[in-house]
Length: 141
Image 1: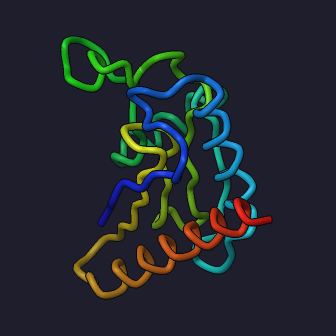
Image 2 (image 1 turned 180 degrees about the vertical axis):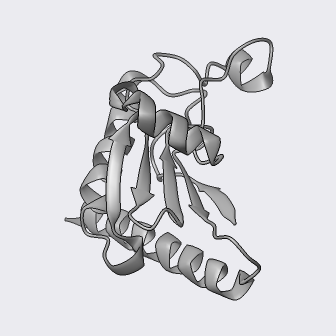
């Protein structure tokens, strides 16, 4: 289960500049530190990931890659300044992820083996609410 989300007041990745992308990443990185329980994990910058971690996450379909070629995202400029200020938050259990500055400011993902959709949706919903709360708290504080 996944959905894209954006940060109010900042342009989306295809139209963004370095400063806005850096703001998105900074806001989210600070917020990720407060996640707990089954949402607790670590943020990885795309440009600083080890080859082993890149291979693991790509092999599981959990990592986005640079938009290239004549595709719409590449043509719209979504790959500008690649891979700067882009990354992935991975829950320790590898069932919750947040892609940062891909097509949207964030792509929030919950997944698991098997067919327990209720558990996957519950984790995704809690993750969306936690991230929303984190961003609202940072903007008001």
